[in-house]
Length: 421
Image 1: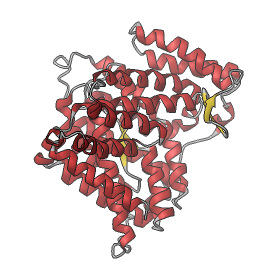
Image 2 (image 1 turned 90 degrees about the vertical axis):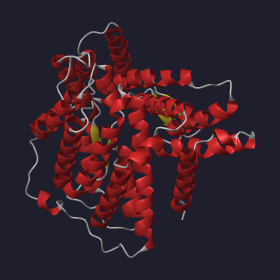
Image 3 (image 1 turned 90 degrees about the horizontal axis):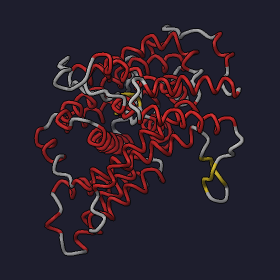
């Protein structure tokens, strides 16, 4: 794993990249615990499940795939767990964990199949580039929202935030500091940016110091979540609809994220396998499904190329249990500029889309537009994959469509149909 010379990197660069990645995703410890608590799980136990799932996922990515990608419970995934599996389908959180386990097994069957991996690699490059750029727009949108630069509006859905808001000008000043640091390739530029943004936030009065008096979390109730899945709903139709829907989402969402972010695409196969195993592990640990974090781009942009990056980030989740009050000090306005910068880096992939050929560019355009506008990577990818064969057939060029795309498009049509029942 430590073949750093061939990867043209150093231990120091990899560790710094891992710290950067961890800082950009550390929010998930608190947020995912809060989300899972809405499904009925004990809050502190859910925090522990989140930490252990992050640790396991990052270790798998590091030790099996030698990949810099970070694995955490995704925000879309936990929302799917709470609002679709539990609320819409009426499953208990224990039955929902069973659905996550089965979806993880489906993902693993795909990821460990040589034929499936070969099929995935036949996906047209415009769709791959669109997925990368679309995720970049999504990350940028998250950054603009976190920083207060974009806010909701009853008249126009979204609008520019109030420039007099301390959250907004903290974001702007931090971005003005962070972007030149990155452009000049200053070591640890993103960490410096976050630290600076936190300091500015303190001066602006948007950092709450009262939380420093809090402690860590207790292990006492965590045993309730270990191996807690319940298959009692397996005889019902909604349960299997839930398993299918979740399987489609996690397979193609992670495929897009990894193909879009990996600096070395040769690591895709093992990274994909590690991700699938992490979801099975997450279900066993009592957590919603894990995903390749979009924020992994921050660590990669900071120079991360190997598993040392993901190993560093993963190990940092353990002491994070005792540093939760300090992590909560970092305001969104200090993280937002980094998301905006890395989103901008990913959007550059759009230049490889052949916009002169509408049969290639229109499906790509749907992916670019709908990932941020529907706030869902899966929905945007689905629209593009469904449109691709339809546009090609309509233009008399159906022979240009790989068999893989027809299969994926059919799965996404079924995903939308079952999701509307």
